[in-house]
Each structure stands twice: as structure tokens, then as C-alpha cells.
Image (cartoon, rainbow, N blue to C red; front, side, top):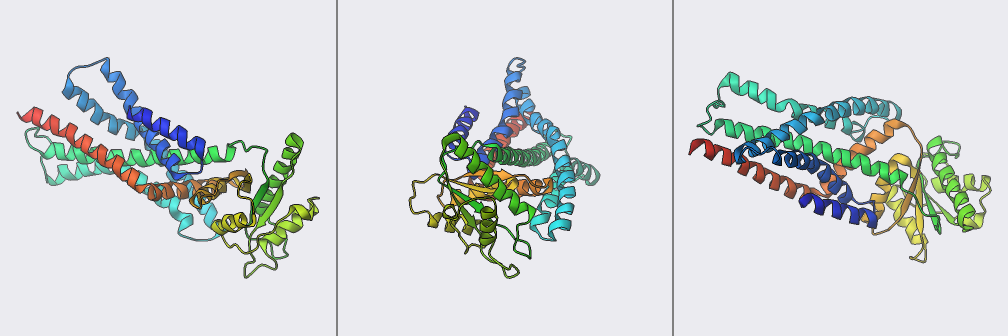
Length: 357
């Protein structure tokens, strides 16, 4: 029933606005609960008492964690390779190394219970073989919680990847009045680098298809200020490119004050007088979800389109939004995990009293 409610909520919020951290949280929790639900539904048809059912529930946690172990290993390998490439191409920064830290954390947490077991056996801190003592039950509880945490985090990461891909492939309606083009650093001669040119070409392509489908034109809003090392503003460079592609000047509205994505969207939206207008934005594919989330934070409803780019940008974007989801929806995650902790403690407590009464 809980799974049904989560699916219903996810469907509702996704339909209202895909660009919400809560969508990632709901989807991740659904992915997390689904295998437990399926596993324990099958146990109904092979019922051998409450204690065995409880043990199956607890064992299923470890089983699912081991199933998800390849995801942790693949994540570690992919993010390490992509982050090395990213550092080489874009320079060193803590943000560019987030994926490596996450991959290492997932791998360490996955093998931690086995290492703890070896340490306990070697040091004899507690007796984990005497079922009449509390030792084995405490270890079982700790082991289960570690497996739960790693499985939970992997499912939230998987939810992030799915939502990010959905954001890029979401079909945008051909009814737009404005198209915001999010800027980025331009070349020294004031022309567009391939990354930014791809965004503008994607916006022009959308406008041409809209004209063909509905005979409705739109206004482009090139967005981006002038950096200290740039000869002209990013928006001016985008405007020049639009003009070279045959776009009329009356269809271009320049926003040249912004310095980041948050300001791109905020200042561009201020240029639009009628708030009932349909607005889209054009950026690079890995950045669509991020830009949409920022727009939602400001209470601005937009639809996004994305141009293609290098694969190494994608993985870092997944990690960034995964971390963003954990922080943004931290109350929801804490409540879910506390409920799970209490549930598992109850299950293990029942087995302890059953073996000692």
C-alpha cells in the first residue's frame, strides 16, 4: 500500500512538473521498495511461520545490496574515468571529484559488514555465535542497516539518472512564445565555442520546427553577461550568431547581466512582461535537469531542450543532482530511513525474544 501511494504521488508530481527534487526522491524510494515487496510477496506462497518470514525479510536486505554491488563498482569505475577526463579538460575542482568520492564510499560501505565480521571474530569483542546473548542480534542489526543504507543510496542515484534522462527526452510542446538560451564562456575573439553553439543551434532547430508545425514564431532571449576575460557579453555573442543564421533582430531580446544559471533564468524571466507566456530554455543535455530545478526553485515553470555534448559531463551531472536531492529532500529521506530502522529493529527484536523465551 505504501508503494502504491508513492507511485501515485510520483506520477502526480511528475505530471505537474518534472523538474523537482521530490520526483527523484519518490522514484528512488520506489526503486528501493520494489524488490523488497516482490521478494516478500513470493514468501507468502511458501509460508513456514512468522520467524522464518522475518529472517527472509532481513536476509533480503543483504541479498538486494549484493545485487546492487555491481552498480557501486560500475559507478566507481565510470565516475573515476570521467572525472579524470573532466579534470584534464575543465581543470581541478572539488565538484569535479565528487563522483570519485561517491564511488569510493559506495564500495567501502558494501564490503564493510564483512570486514566488521572479521574484526569481531579476531578480537572477540562480542560473541556473535551465541544466540542466547544479544551480541549476534546487535551485529545483525548493524550489518542490515549498512546494507540498507548502501542499497538506499544506490536507488536514489538510479532515480537521479532516470529523471535526468527523462528531462532530456521530454517532448516539449510547439507553443512557445520565448526561448531562453543559457550562455557559457565564449572564445577570445567573441565567437561561440562548440558547447554554446550547440545550444543556439538546438534553439533555432526548435523554432523552425514550431514554425513548420504551428506557424507560430518565438522570441529568443540570449542570456549571459560579460566575464572579465571576455571581449563582449555571452548574450551579445549569441545574438550575433542568431543574426548570422537569419534570425531577425526584432525576434531577439538580450539579457546581459547574469553570471550563472540562477541569474540566467531570473533576469530573463523579468524581461518577459506577460507572465502567462509559454517559455522554454535551451542548454546542453546534461544541464537540462539542473536548469529546470533552478527554475522550479524560483517558482518559474519552463520546459527545456538540450544539445548533445561529451559523455564525461553527464556522469558528473548525475552525481551533482544526486547530492542535491539528498540535501533538498533530507527530511523525507531521514523519515523513511528512521521508519526502516525501527522496522528492522522490531524484526530482529522479535527473533531475539523468540530464541530466548
